[in-house]
Length: 221
Image (tube, rainbow, N blue to C red; front, side, top):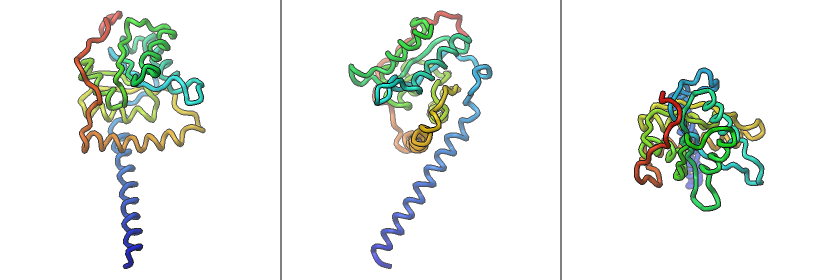
């Protein structure tokens, strides 16, 4: 067998292996968490604290980001329905010009949620960081996660790994024309999550001292 054929056969084997790893990882992430994902607020269990996962409030062209807006609308709806008492808004704040938690707080306040029930986590650089910090920094081991449908499964998978009793509520997802690239990225992100948790044992980039949530103004659940 020529060297070229050996190389091609090796590349084909690696490609098939990669596809299998991606498929198996995605099946594992989704199947192991799907019973904790809710689309109907009425069926959602009541939890004291909700974790809103961060994203930019603007798209690259400067228009409003529907992912951001829909997470905020869902968070406000849950508060008004008494499904949660307090929010951890966790996102990226790596420069003075980009502050996801602060933008989420301003948007939630505009929706009628008092700032006294909002705690900001400025070090939620990734989903992994946000989930772990909700427990290790803010002391929460039972949470409701608010994000889009494609993202819920991975967030819950990480939560389960760290023994966090979590459920997730689906904010409205991507439009049909935007769905394909979003889901392709998420398929790869789920595979990376499995590798990060079980092989690389990745930790958050920033931890720091434990922090208390702001005083909860409603009766504790």
